[in-house]
Amino acid sequence: MTMELDMNWDGNPNLVLGIKTLVGVSLPVQVKNIGFTGVFRLIFRPLVDEFPCFGAVSVSLREKKKLDFTLKVVGGDISAIPGLSDAIEETIRDAVEDSITWPVRKVIPILPGDYSDLELKPVGMLEVKLVQAKNLTNKDLVGKSDPFAKMFIRPLREKTQRSKTINNDLNPIWNEHFEFVVEDASTQHLVVRIYDDEGVQASELIGCAQIRLCELEPGKVKDVWLKLVKDLEIQRDNKNRGEVHLELLYVPFGAGSNGIVNPFASSSMTSLERVLKNDTTDEENASSRKRKDVIVRGVLSVTVISAEEIPIQDMMGKADPYVVLSMKKSGARSKTRVVNDSLNPVWNQTFDFVVEDGLHDMLVLEVWDHDTFGKDYIGRCILTLTRVIMEEEYKDWFPLDESKAGKIQLHLKWMAQSIYRDS
Image 1: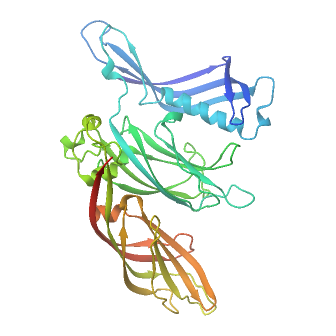
Image 2: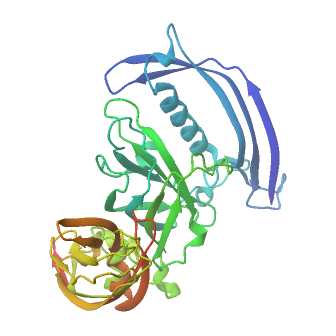
Image 3: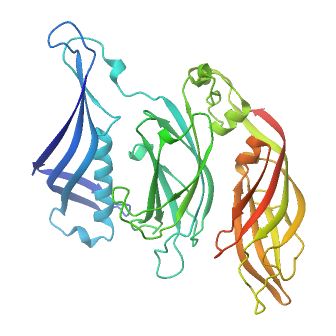
């Protein structure tokens, strides 16, 4: 039996936090004027014949509507350290919400018994490939922002993953892998926050985004671009803050028995690597097996077919475009011929690249305008190899980033040779 109740709480408790900053300054911070409104979920389970007819009650916050409080440094001004108030407030909000928000629950026994099955338990793993971001808002007065990402399903410090910082770049490429424990795929979200790294000062938020895990098909890689907003709870933010590119894969524990490839046989391998390995051993047996690393090696064949709507580059209303292809890890490069006086060039040229680590490499295509005395940059397209490795062959159009217009048509083909090595 489940009940959901609207509840309000206002109080003025005397809470003093001991805050230690990165520069070693310790501050006593008082939390005052706390107000809270939300929907609480009460689950009465299991139902029994003995009065009061249920063995335990599970309590959780199903929906947070409002959480307000004020911060004050005991004997000082919290605004004396730039960014400190915002950083503390964000940490407090995350900690409070994670401690009581569904699927986290407090199990209160009513009748004697073992209720461990009611406690929160992992149900699967989510692998995230943080690919790139584009058109980020610049937070620096001099130069460009130094973006990095934080990602979490539950906003606890030990459960939050952080990417590396890309200096002076509003279109950063990370290509980093992260894994998260999932406890309720039907209600949980993956949250991504992009920050500008300010060194010893508090990092400034550029934008955030989230995706519901229930939107993911178990065992299938989902490729998404998420629009960044200022606040996930305020939907009136129309300012362009950029986008972030993710590849997501969710696989439940014990998925092999349901016909879904279980990717958790070797803990040193990413989930995508294990899916491609087609290993159906249950996660519970993984720790007893010998760890392995996987290298997906092969030949990537790229046919640059054509482009359309290339922006005008010269006084005659035309352009002389060509494409430079490169692999990000190996540095291998090739380029097409120049097509003169065309905004819709056709190349139909094929290039082969020997790839040593397909799951962690990227294909970068840059479109340039050829001039007699140099060249002008038009735009680029960045592709991971995930799709071509899993589909083996496909043809598609891709928009040109960092360009006002334009798209490029490619045909990609993968000829793989997977090599596994013991570690």
